[in-house]
Length: 85
Image (cartoon, rainbow, N blue to C red):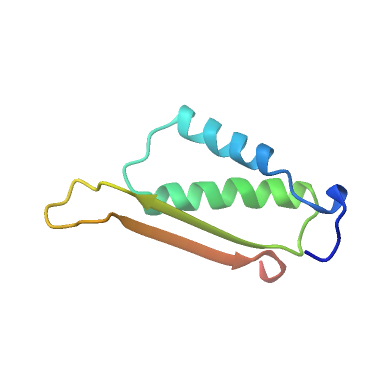
């Protein structure tokens, strides 16, 4: 938000590609575990870019959990400022 330069951004395409590859490579039973794995992977990606000035929030939504009585799905979020890590 502070500049209008592409060089100051993180490539969303690359981040999505990393997530897609992760879920193709393995199966996850729990959204909490999936969220943690996505966080760790994106954290490493951002550290490789030396982007310690970013806060990273991962939210996973499970639209139709196989639990009787739950309507509208469930979600799990994890947030951390990379500057604090």
